Length: 136
Image (cartoon, rainbow, N blue to C red):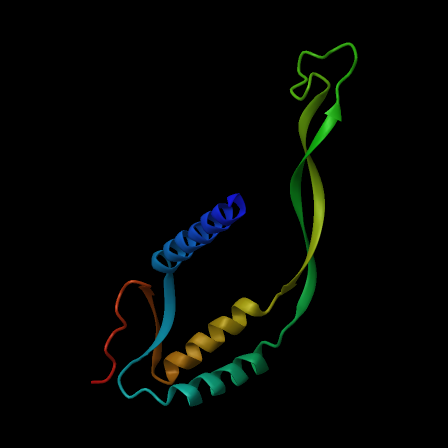
């Protein structure tokens, strides 16, 4: 019986998290302006053009991150030992490598400009707001 109650609490907790997340965010969508071209055509064309101008160019980058480590205290000075009287918590820098697309921002900008040219503009709205009526 205890196992079932634990499972029910987990499901209820997951449901609460899902409700909070789904009602608290915002979304960006393309909204047609006057005389906008077909959305499918516009987005396909602009995607192809922006990728042609700014192809994916992945490069390895590095950044410094600070990791908490335990350092053994000296025998003669235990006054600053904050973990079991034997260790200190210290922040030590580590270098981390990651891959980034250096053209991503330029490609996004080219895509946005192209979509504007074809009659579309980006609009942010909160998830609880109704979609704007674009049928007129």
